[in-house]
Length: 157
Image (tube, rainbow, N blue to C red; front, side, top):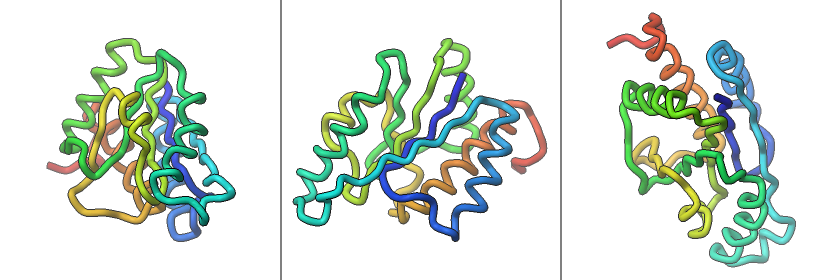
């Protein structure tokens, strides 16, 4: 199974770059991994939030293959424990999922059309985090889930 982390926005800020690289490098010991940064539309500053989300959706949806499993990150999604995430990843791998995409939306979230395409909507927390920080948290939590799946010592209960 390949794990894909997609994020709408610019490149990783310096304060997250090192951590994202560290955990991404660890994840590849368990799964193939790819990062894709989807640029914000050029006219973003002049668009209303609803229109901006629609433009972003027009960039995102064509990239998703029919067989891809899409996890939309959204504060209104269901929450999981680290063990729950490990179980989720294991179940997707057991189901023969070829690629699972974890999608971090833009500043105003994800368009309804992307939400409808999502197989699962996941909330990292009831708190709202900066999108850059979500990238780091996501990478760390997926790495943590991988170690739980392999019964390794990283995760302490």
